[in-house]
Image 1 (cartoon, helix red, strand yellow):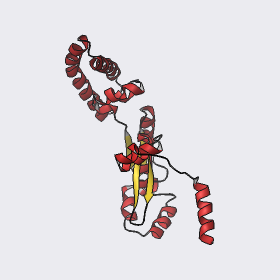
Image 2: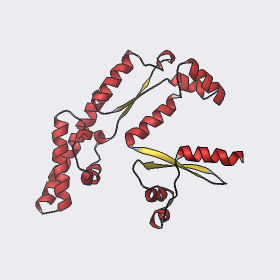
Image 3: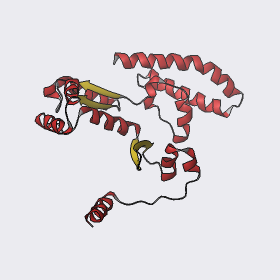
Image 4: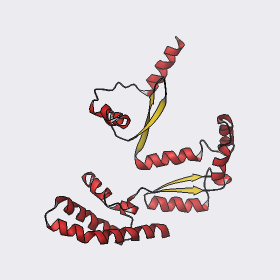
Length: 213
């Protein structure tokens, strides 16, 4: 709460210093300045109410202008609780408090044990699975951290596979095939023609059938 408050105060100071200049441009019928001024006033009202800037209501078409305000508290937040080995699966009283605070502030929260992650780094895949099973865990904390971060940011990954390498590419959820191709190279998006797709279950089933033949 102390850190959050300090960040909100920094945002308030930033917006208050910026407002006069933007207001002057807005009075000169600058459309962008008018939009920015509206977002500044909206953000100031939220911050003065003791809330982070990520709670500012805005339309999709306002998102770019809002991002340009560069407010610290507009960022997505993820709390990571480092607990002892025995609490890695279910958490403890302190992590429960963090989870409650995160939920009330529309933030993410993940429980990990740095000690467990340190031990896993020294084990083979088979030994890792056995060790995690003994602790009642299905996967390493690092995996959960990555998944939660992707979920909060609205991201997903797809893979390209070739004879020389296999690579992972990060895109936003909802991106269509042309945008996904553009992550590899902008020319792929501009010259995109079509994509052939197949369901995962069908791919696995048919792939197995081909392998059997």
